[in-house]
Length: 177
Image (cartoon, rainbow, N blue to C red):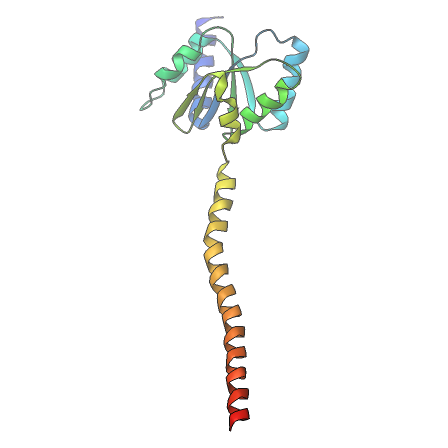
């Protein structure tokens, strides 16, 4: 690879790291070409961009991003590395879990989720359980609607109870009077 090709790859990776706030560093070694192609297809179906990288170029790309410190990730960029870039934090972990039902890779080396760093393959379950932004917004809306529904329900039932009470008092007054 020429110096210019390396620089082009660094710039390409830098732009990927800057535009995506979620990326995973995985080890897909020992997978056959056929298995890697299956993984690529699964990633593509789920909106994940998969990229096999040279660790030194990935580190240089991360180092070139201003006002950011990715140094905690550099340890994960040793040995064979595949990057998974995603729009949703939990999708790559779900894809990894799904793919592992049939194969023993990829292994999670590290994940960068909205400035938080998760290291080690044991983090896959925790990452898969993360809620997406849309799911969190839905939960908040449900929570906000719940008290209003309770108040309306109480007013409706209270109104019926109040009307029944008024009617009973009216009937009682008539029978006594």
